[in-house]
Image 1 (cartoon, rainbow, N blue to C red):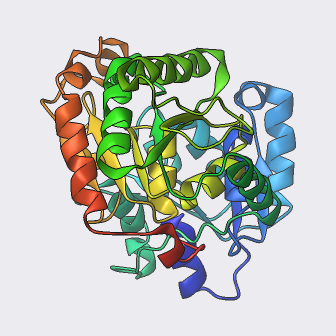
Image 2 (cartoon, rainbow, N blue to C red; image 1 turned 180 degrees about the vertical axis):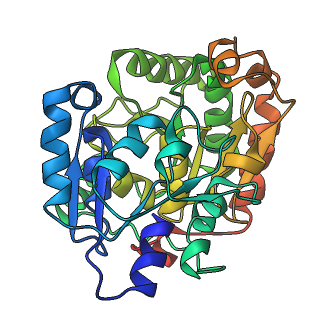
Length: 342
């Protein structure tokens, strides 16, 4: 997203198009600087006939430039098929598979963090040290849906807990989330709203709520949609734009290195991120208003780290996470004081 804004700032009259897989399209469409969003599925990239359709679609637009911040075959191939005479991507070692062979300009990024690395791709265009801005404009309809839920639940201020993660090695125990939720309620009278996606994560969210009920005794949490506010409440099923709206209104976010953490950071919510098989220096929540916790780094190849257990995550204690929450809450950041465009 900062890459899009840097390009728009440099080329205000350019036609900017983002090619994305369908899962992320609803978020990408919230960027006002884009002229068009095109979607492509993995199966389309594996079909010779579909590749010819993608090629015609892209070449009809007569692109002058393609920038690939992902650095994989599935992203570099459409850039090459677009016919753009200039295609910028990462050098070998930072881009993988056949991707480096499909670029005309290869950038050996020196930055550690992925956001800064992506912005280095603009170096060949003479754009250096652009302002980092995510610019995610919240969807009005999604915002209205979330406002209705918050009003029904009588939630004014709340922390968001996200127990899910794309890798099992990034998961933090439900019992630890429950301890943090109890701490937030007992010390700050701050309710915790547990977000989820799919049956598996909903089960974890229900476990967190159940364990918090047991620990808090008579301080009964709310029971979900339409409930009165309590210490722990289950969020409704949300789309990505609705999740962005919910996160933008939150006082605090707690979760591991996964999509909702970075979405929360993008909309300006203070985050406590927990890290095991990845490094905060590379993919921590971007900005100095966040706290990233890591007991130790669970090293190895990407495949090994993805497939390992979550012992490095379990080494982070609820007490450490609760202390990080206290640190951020003492700064007094309120969602009402933040812009709704990050």
